[in-house]
Length: 339
Ligand SMILES: [Zn+2]
Image 1 (cartoon, rainbow, N blue to C red):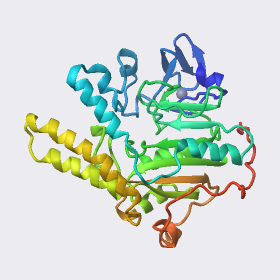
Image 2 (cartoon, rainbow, N blue to C red):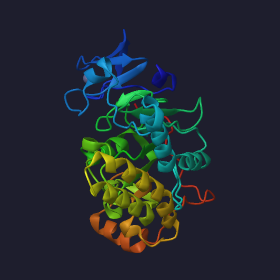
Image 3 (spheres, protein in one colour):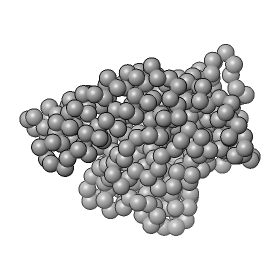
Image 4 (tube, rainbow, N blue to C red):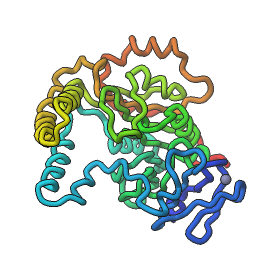
C-alpha cells in the first residue's frame, strides 16, 4: 500500500488503533472495523459518523463532488467545448499573488533539512511534490494522486506523524472545521506547520457540501492553537466581483435559454475582474479568501484578546509573504514521531 511504502502508519478513524492488512481490506484489532481497499486505495472512513458512506466507495465512484473540470470528460460537441472554455477561464489566475502550497513546501524544505513528512487533506486531483517524496495525499473522492480516502474529521494517522499539513479549499466543506483543525494539530509533530487557504466571500459551491465561510479574524481564530508564520488575502475584491457578477447574471431568469449565455458572460468577465485583485489592494475586509501558514503551538491557545489585537496590528496591512529563510525558526524537535 502506497501509504505504507511512504512510511506512514494507517490507523482506525474510529479509535486511532493501528490497522492490519487483510484481503482487500484493512482491519482494526481494537474495534474489529473492516476498511475496504478499492483499486489499491484504502477507504478509511468511519461509516457511523461521516457524511460519506463507505458503501458508496465500494459500489460506485464514491463521492463525486469535487469534480470541477471533469464535466468535459463526459460531454461531447459544443458542451465539451463549453466545459473546456469554462475550465480554462476558471483557471485564469488572480493578479494578487500569494504563496501557494508548492512554494510553502519549498520554504519548509529549505528551512528544515530533513525531508518533511507532508499530509495533503483534500488533494483534489493535484499532486504536490515529486515521486519519492514523503507526501501523502488524501481526499474524499477517488482521483489521480489520492493515496487514501479519509474524512478530515477523523484523520486515520498517528499523532505527530507529519511536519506539514496542506489544507486548501477544504475547511469550508466540512461540517465541523474546529474538529478538523484539531485533527490537523494532532497529526502534526511539535513545531510542525499547517498551510490553509479558505474562502470568505465566495458563493456556495459543491452544493450541500459547503458549510462555512471565515472572515480573516475568524480564520485566524480557527488556528488559535498555532502561531502565525505568515497570512494574507488569497483572492481580492476583484475575484469577489467576478463571483457576484456571475451569480447576479444567473439570478436574472430561471429559463434554460438564459443560463448558457449567462454562464458564458460571467466566465468571460471573470479574468478581467480578477485583474482588479492586484490593483485594489486595500480590500482585505471584502476579500474572496484568506491563507494562513502557522506553526503548531504547544500549551494554551492564542487568546481572543490577542487575536483582536493581532487584527489591528497587522492583518489588514499584510499582503503576506513567507518570512526570509535567513532567519530559520528554532530547530524542529524530534523528526521521528513519538510512539
Ligand atoms: Zn478501530
